[in-house]
Length: 212
Image (cartoon, rainbow, N blue to C red; front, side, top):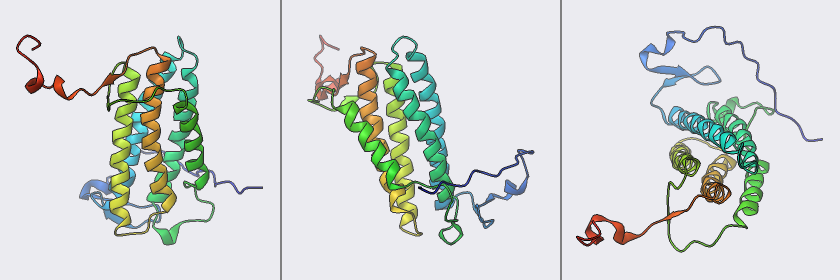
């Protein structure tokens, strides 16, 4: 039987402690570091991504009232939020302090994303140009998730240049960003929203006086 992660043991009775007023914060192992350190930047951006996904999941659930197929995406996004907290747990812990049963990202999470992407991408039309975010609100929000995810990935790559970061963590963020792109297109299709394709000559310099 596959080993499970430990359940969190938290007692949050007080939100503020004043200990961070000097610009420092504590890692999971108790070490004090600056709030501008690479490790804090990495898991802080993952936390930001989780918040943006929460907004997007709420939108997917709203759209799901009229397009029930969208509830499948809402469930995926909810699972991803849990997975990102697992990722944050590892990033907030120095490698030497990681417990064998501590929550983390594994190859299973990466593989699940690939399976879901392949399934949803299979029914989408081939692209003839890059896609502009928009067409419907959910599409734009998924693109926002994609760009924040790429920023989280860059932060983790920067951290990996200085400290140890699990390879699965980098793989997961790379795959997740691709997932948001596929899901944005899939959401537009389910919502019957047109995709906006990039047309270079729609720039001001490419428009004639009559078109402008």
